[in-house]
Length: 154
Image (tube, rainbow, N blue to C red; front, side, top):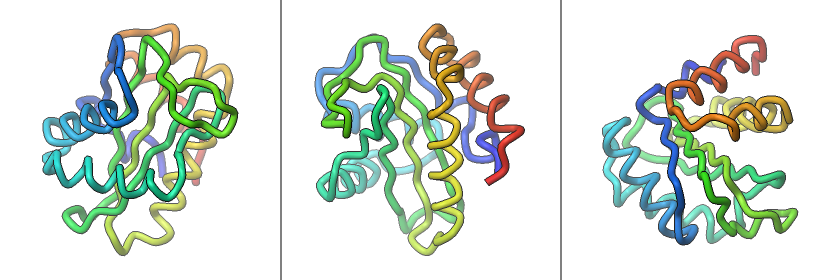
């Protein structure tokens, strides 16, 4: 599995600012509707439900919100880079500026875990995060994410 398999170029966005985690989830819902053909409210509700179980901010400015959806049959991803970091209740209490959102079919099992592991591995790489933070063009951000993942099989 490679990030290019689950992250379409249209599912990458750079936002100048976001006022709250809930607003970020609304942005993700709108992005999912426009780029993945998913229903925005379903996405927002699923993300909020998952986040209620515990924050998905994994540290070092990275968040990995994720949810399972009945309406899809393959793992799908989206990425938002925030120009102004957002308080996210991350494990290290640092604000978040790199957000990789994953959706998996309700019965995905291993594929969902493989995708989470791949994204986590990619965003633990300090060089990748530095490049992501240095770019504001969504196409360049997509290229950085997918080129890096080409050598990392899950």
